[in-house]
Length: 85
Image (cartoon, helix red, strand yellow):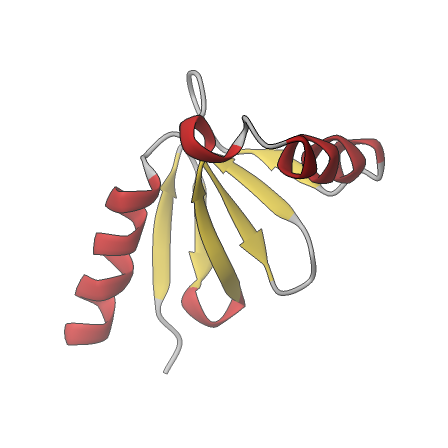
């Protein structure tokens, strides 16, 4: 059975496609993260699902990146809630 996690806006993602949830405030200071996100954007692999300033990003199994409005902690709770039901 497929379960989906709401990322904000009109975006939801199947939980099995999620590789990682990352907080932009805590990870964007690293040059490696900035380079990874820049390269993903240049390659057209970034989708912005945030209606305002994104707080987190989701790395997908297909190496796409989704910028999301909720924090990584909120998205992790949503994932956890999905697993409990």
